[in-house]
Image (cartoon, rainbow, N blue to C red; front, side, top):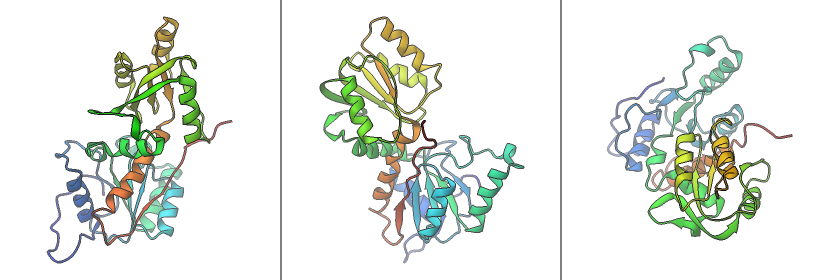
Length: 277
């Protein structure tokens, strides 16, 4: 089932136990106002399905789905698309064997796949950022009033990169900037926020470096390259889309446990989409 479903009546003497009831409870606990045209809808499965367990993840890859089934989790809460495009449009995949096998696995195991993207970013503070701050160890570097901004004692870009490599040892980091440049202000722009947001962050006079997820190589990369050649103290660091957001779904699992007491909850890591050579 694809689409936003109406709020479901919950029994007076029992906790929510259908997928639809659990999802409505989650949205309520974010404290967010309704998001128009949200992508946070059920992508596969029925809201009437009784939930045996919840798995939170960044991408519902085949491996993640198999591990969820092994853990007896049938409500999969995923941050990013299920079917390879933002709105999970499947028209062009109808004859595609990869799509068909994935859909069959989901249906055979009676799974419910719900995307939790718009609403988790509206938790105060942003749930994805909260998870990433813990992962990166930047709790003491937060700037009051802006959850995306961080302040460091005068360190070099090279030192920052060494720390990022320790956090993500299996992955490469793409960098434009002078490794000896000293920095004190950093903006974190996770996911695929786009070059407009990344460049706007770089315009902040107190920000020397932006740590981001991803962008087409011909956009922010080239803007920063020109800035560096012009002698400006700016740098961009791309750590990858998954690396920049995945720990937000670990936060999600921990957060869910605060108000979901009768359903087992597991965080299932998907890891990087690719390996580097």
